[in-house]
Image (cartoon, rainbow, N blue to C red; front, side, top):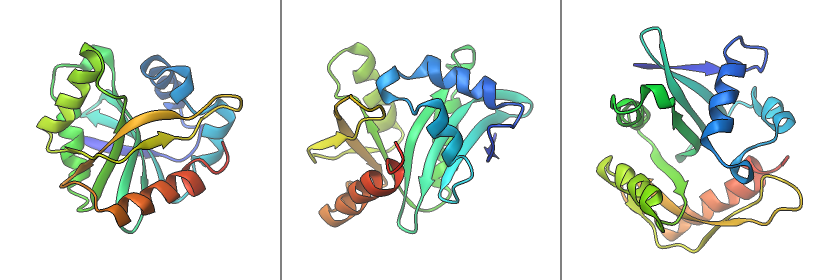
Length: 174
């Protein structure tokens, strides 16, 4: 398994990846098309396709800083699920040797509880910070999310660094 970084929306796989993205996340959790194209070549931003040999398995979109990696979006193609691609992709990301941070919806139903369990089995920890993700679309409000991290829970200072980075860099042009 490997990641292939895409730095341009002109890449032949962009439309395939974009279709998976739109199918995998509700509209309020998606970047608009123009905003996505705009950040593709940002040095901190990784729009990585997940491959197993020649098989496109999914994508992981993350931001890499000196201190941590923030996983903004992560999804596996529905036709490729239950083959441990998600777990294997997270293991590859862990090899970068940085703290991993991601957000999930609060576990209120079967699907959200299963998602939290998936990340916990992968070694992630639930953090107790009250966290609101800024809106991706004008006119929308931010939404409450649960912050998870690996290899351990975040210290307050690291959470504050992440939250500032999220608001001032990740969401700057939204």
